Length: 90
Image 1 (tube, helix red, strand yellow):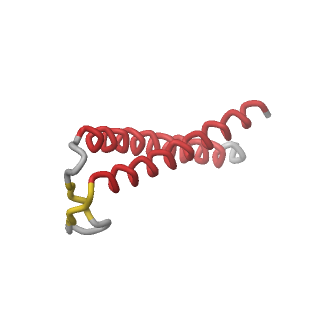
Image 2 (cartoon, one colour; image 1 turned 90 degrees about the vertical axis):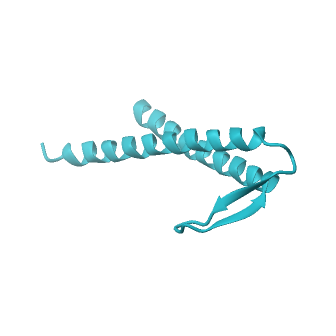
Image 3 (tube, rainbow, N blue to C red; image 1 turned 60 degrees about the vertical axis):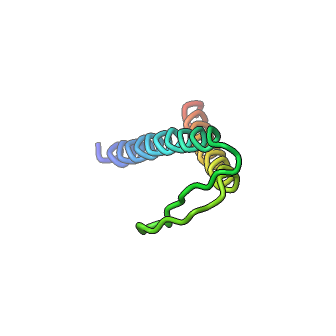
């Protein structure tokens, strides 16, 4: 029995990781959508990581960064999906 417990914990951790990734993807999609709807020459506030400090930045630059982040999240999600499919085949 103890041989199966680590596998369940591992599956639970991967499931949690996948859910967290889905949540981040949804959040990033909302940010990209909102930035896309702003007029071209608008400025937006960007929060510094791990602080309550905000800086005024260019919308197009921020939109580009957010799209890149979204692409990276989607790639990570696809890698998880592919690894799950290969495990099922084995």
